[in-house]
Length: 532
Image (cartoon, rainbow, N blue to C red; front, side, top):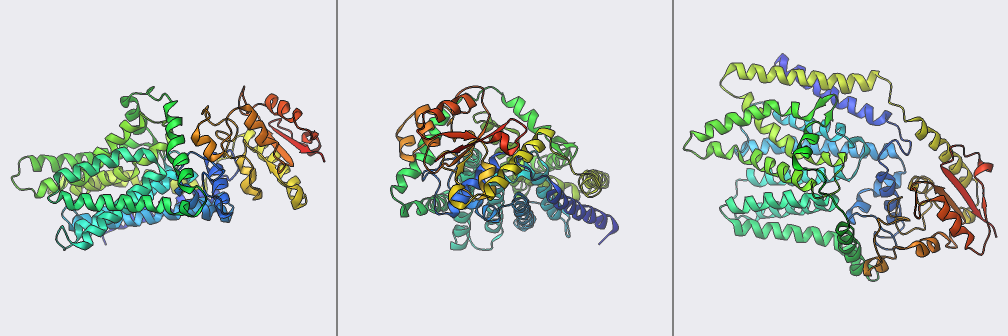
């Protein structure tokens, strides 16, 4: 191995070490990470106790979310969850590297012998997945990307196979890839739009569209079956599944107005997303030049060999364009930018492979110099900064809230198990940390007491989701709730302290406030105990 190749390889591996250090040192205080993680851990803990999603519990997710977070809920640690997700990203990086090699064997990516592009692609995927906004949180976006990479890997095996297009092995690979695509959609539903477009383009241009269509439909059916089967063993399971996975999300979506940001603004926001001090657009300049070289050669060529080199990046670009267009029709937030990782890596791999083996020495030197500069920047801003720098500290309010939360944990841990029942509707972190199930059907501050303004319907009655202040109050006053932990979140409505006190006054039992006795200082937490 030449010295330049050794330098790049060492830089990339040290960058991965820096990511591992970052995960280990990151704050685990609730409030310093995405609060949705707490809700998902509570949901997964309910699953460990035998309660399926939508079975007297609701979170606007599909059932797969409960199963994917089960190992983290069993471990009961945010750090363990992040390490598991980092392991998932590393596995996805390995599969992406193998996929690029398989695409090269199939003539879809032009790699030179002993190319560094496969390794670079795997490392880039891990860096993007961990360093883009929301990456370290370990959200469902990471699992969706993992399923997408599995699908890409299976497609690369199908493209690399020596069997005829209609062979049983290729058919099974296509069906399995379709299943993983459906599971990715189950993690992040917006993916259904770009994946549908990509599948349609493949069918239109494939020599055997009927064979491919049967494989894709079979894979989708298998994926749906995996989600449905557990509900066949519970009472009214199919009704629960339809109400929670289809009816309620449609009711929620019908009340939303999302057309506030145009496509140009979304493109600009995604292009400027920070990656270890670099904007995303800086990473695609060199691969873009490589794709222009391929397109220029294919334009003047009469053979289809060069056109095949545009297939993988072309489909990836279509995926990206439709994904951004789909963001305009959903409740887009910065964490959704993680979904550009897989197509971006495929585009980068195809473009850099062309630059790596071009006959023009000046382009090869420029590509290597650019790769070295980017690698040095990422190495400095990730490995050096994380290993030798001080870890970022949470905001003062977050730290103060954690002190109050620690006092609450000590209080509940010291109680007999029969008196430990409580509900903290706006702070699910307390429930998974103490492993005490919440009695509210909705999980987390957005669904426990104020379910997004949804009106009463067949779906809410089927799941048991309280709608209206009378039902919400009755939920809080259940006999199982010996204590109530309250956090002020909204200026009006059921998430206010005024509503809570009005609700408690309706109970026949007397409620005593223990906030002062416990020394909760921030004023954000209120603790009430039901007297016998």
